[in-house]
Amino acid sequence: MTVAPSLSGPLLRMHFHDCFIRTNGPYWDVETGRRDGKVSLFTDPINPVTGLPPFSANITALKQSFALRGLSTKHLVVLSGSFKTFDDSYYKLVTKRKGLLQSDAALLNDPETRAYLVQATSQGSTFFEDFGVSMVKMGQIGVLTGSQGEVRKLCTKTN
Image (tube, rainbow, N blue to C red; front, side):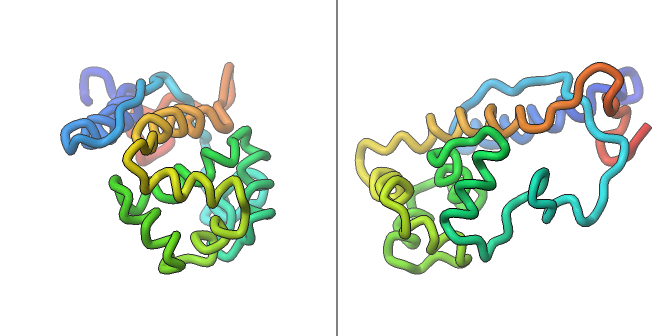
């Protein structure tokens, strides 16, 4: 990183991607060259417009939150399970009402999200393909362009 420190962010994203590939997980093309903001605030993750929806959100709030970011209901279900496991065990637990969070249980309260939960536990599951599409789409949220933000020399610190 001493030769090209601005590559640290993209390399970290590619490393994360490659970890999934090595464990027979999903595949997706990693987009590089993303600019990061110059300020990070502890409160950002709970910001209703830019942050994550609360784990206590009902299905209506979850769908609205994802829609604000340009993500579909399918992305909601795929990404809900993706950070907990990379097999169908998350979806099996949720369909048995054994999810950990209220937002997990909320996925059963909507015909569209419930249908994906059931499909994800079937032989013809498209979860890995869907996960790749959702990761690319999620990476396109709030992209900074032009003079906004910066390509960081060290991904954990502003320049």
